[in-house]
Length: 373
Image 1 (cartoon, rainbow, N blue to C red):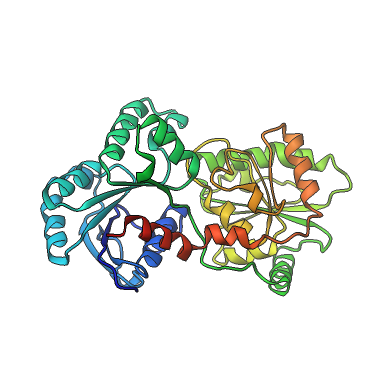
Image 2: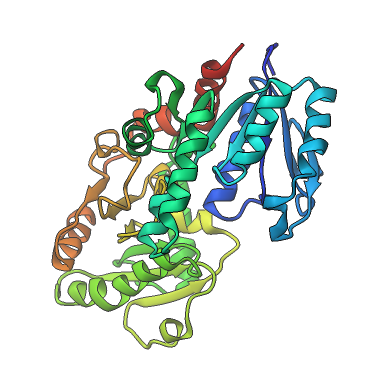
């Protein structure tokens, strides 16, 4: 860690260790790399194990009760931590603890950072929640009170500047990242492919398609149903295209796991998801709803997979830095299927520009410089 006058404390209101979901990794990994560039503390719930924090101290102050979001006594505990550790900046993950951030800003003099994983009000609007507008106004107010505003994709940053009336010089895109700087070697990918071929009895000449996610999240489940009931039947009409579709993840409904569908393998939760990213050929991302950058798509591309996505699913990822490996379509399902067939012959490599943007240490350095005192 370099010498820095900045001491940043991140307020994380839920369990992030071990980091399994994309949102958990987005916090845990940014924390890990920020701690290399500024003094860093994480203040979080008691369900997080302090021993899992890499390079910084993790202080547990909240229970996992939903009441933690409205507990006013938390202010006094965290104020004491700020004074004792001489913290200069507080970062909120999501705007929900905005009231607490404002109190800490007003009564301790810390500089307030709000890190938006997506525009929460709009996300809940898309998911059909009637109260989304109230959250949107609260979110706007909290962002306007912050010294710095971090967003995970440019589209959210530009939206907030326009609709929340934020000052552009206080806003920065801090995307989701990956921990490696080069794609897997051809040998690594071949070994992983052979592992999948053996494990799932996949014919050698099949193109291996992959979809991975947490299927208790409605946008992922809707995407899976679209793949199973629309994309695969469209591919089946292309007699010369040979494929196997792998689906990995938790909470896959029985209605799908019990399907007797040729070329569809429901792998469920797997411990070695990296093998699937390295060994599969094309990642499918037919996501039309939900907010934020799709972390699985970033990871798939970083493993040198090809990918077909809707434009909504590819928010935050510029196809121009992907060397034609990311194909975007909001066309018909037949159009989605055509892109899959097209990419099945693509042998290009993901370029260095992709890693320049998505390597975690580059991201953390940019954030540290932006808030440096």
